[in-house]
Length: 129
Image (cartoon, rainbow, N blue to C red):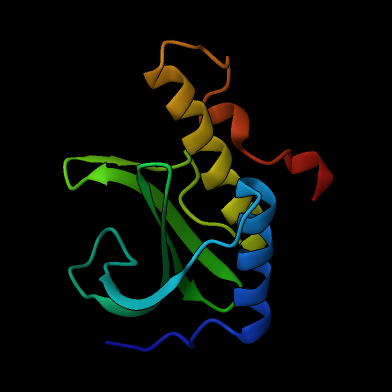
């Protein structure tokens, strides 16, 4: 069981800023630790720092799984969980933006509006890297 370093003050500041921009208000974030199996072929779990927030009926988590490595998802209930279509991000801002956009699209779809976006279309353009 290896440990991943905590979110830095700078990372937390960036998350708060992005949430304030998205929701036009301060959003309370909570820090937690989760155990994740980082290797799909292994049952070994790793303690990962986690940022959690709740907004507009959805719960969001961003997991720090390594140095500049993040995973994310949002959920409404334990049985209604969603990802972004990307397993891991190397940029925190891209990770948070993707989960916010994916949830916003999902919210519209739940209301019967089709955004035309899919998880596949939210993947970063490899030619720009």
